[in-house]
Length: 128
Image (cartoon, rainbow, N blue to C red; front, side, top):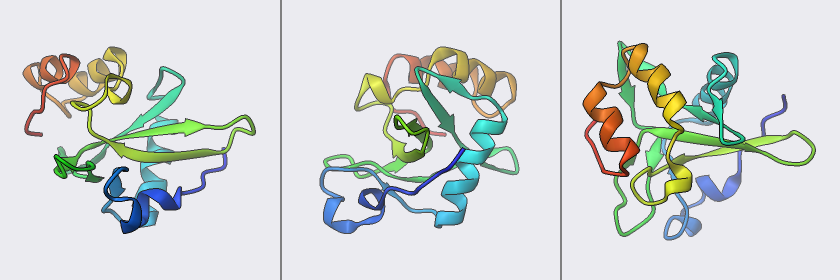
C-alpha cells in the first residue's frame, strides 16, 4: 500500500486549522506500516499509535484552541488506494475517535487502560 505524507500536516501555515505531526516523517510512515500490519482497521481507516517501552508517545499536536499533544493517528485512503494520515484529537471530533474495536485491541495489548478507553469512547481528554 503506497503511503504519501500530506504536507498540510507538516506546514505551520496550516497549524491554525489542521493537526501537525511532530515526529519525523520516517516515524509517520512507520506508524502507518505498523497500523496496517497489525490490522488496526475500522471506519474505513487505519488507526496508529507510537509506543516506546509500553508508553504511547505523542505523534503531533491538535489545532487551536487546544494545541496539545495528539497520541493517535488516522490514516485514510483515496480512490487509488494511496494513503495519508494525520494526528487526531479524539476529544474534538467524533470522526477522529478510534473505533471501540481498535481501542479494545490497544487495551488488551496493554497500551491503554480500561479507564482511558472509557474516556476516549466518551470523547474526553485523557492523559496517556
